[in-house]
Length: 147
Image (tube, rainbow, N blue to C red; front, side):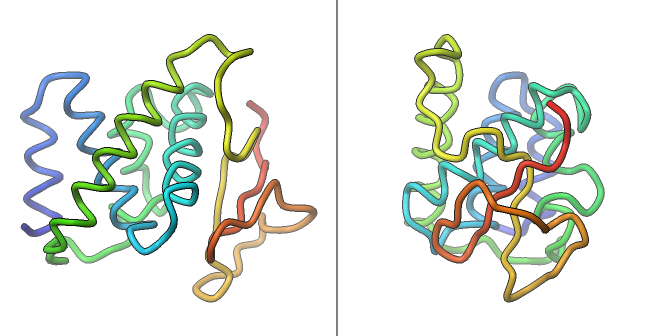
């Protein structure tokens, strides 16, 4: 299925299903070739951004904010055709959201405080400086904004 079709469908879905689909799409596009931990970390960054309120008031708004996550960086014609990777991204997304809904002190965190990530082989943004929170696979996670 084309990315544009998936994003269009998320506009028709009621909450919380739209947010789940948007986050799973982001995890698929950003980290489908990464470990479960790496995929959870990507999802965690999006959830943390949602909680901050600085990037949108729902996950679809957060992950489709201009030039922030893959849904706005990848061609709308991109064919999301790896069903196994999609199913894994959905499963990891749902588990990460369940974990995120636990009280903060008991919440399992993969990249505490991280609100940005980058694949240094693909980009060198100005904000990617200082000590990273973590590097998981080819993603490096940073705490950049005030949360």
